[in-house]
Length: 276
Ligand code: GLN
Image (cartoon, rainbow, N blue to C red):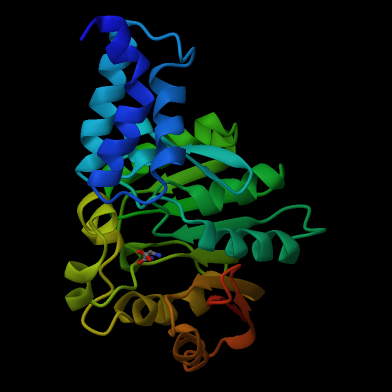
């Protein structure tokens, strides 16, 4: 086969390889691969087709496309992502929307993100409100490196500090926070092996594992949150499927008041909101 004929078949070849590997949406993913590897497709040079094949090779190993490309859209921005952070999910955007509604008319204040990961929740809020300040906490130094880069990308770095520690080690936050946001690990430890390859192999386990019953982090955060929040401060918590009501109870038992549970676009009770 001549080089030109090979290149002419590139799109079909990528599609059929993705189909054989059982990747959903093979045509859409092929077009995304070509857009990144060979922007002038169907004109393709050798380096571009090599790049497309390299991306294809990673994808058929079930690495998610956003991690191969290194970027993911979330809310109104594009975030850097890699294997050190949980890929931002559309399900989480509801938490950002609710936070933005609650912070309306607030001329100043501090938002604290526990387990910030890529920073997608906190940084989206800061981008919306130029006077707010943020603190992003993560036990993973590598995740924080990504969050710091994203803060710079979104132009909010001067208003944001990052702390590389466990939330249980946070100090000096007594009654000082206007809002806490968190999407902590909430998958039951034994369930992780059953997740799809894209998640269990390429999202960091530390960002998924919520302990034996999945509620370990919620319980820890519930003990800490009331003393970190200002009076009338809010906490917005992402819930896994079927967890929202129990999360509400865990936080109410520590003295916060349940405001509402909000569904994501898929109709799942996704965001639990409480007030001090
Ligand atoms: N929502 C993620 C998933 O479904 C889990 C994120 C988390 O544990 N916070 O895989």
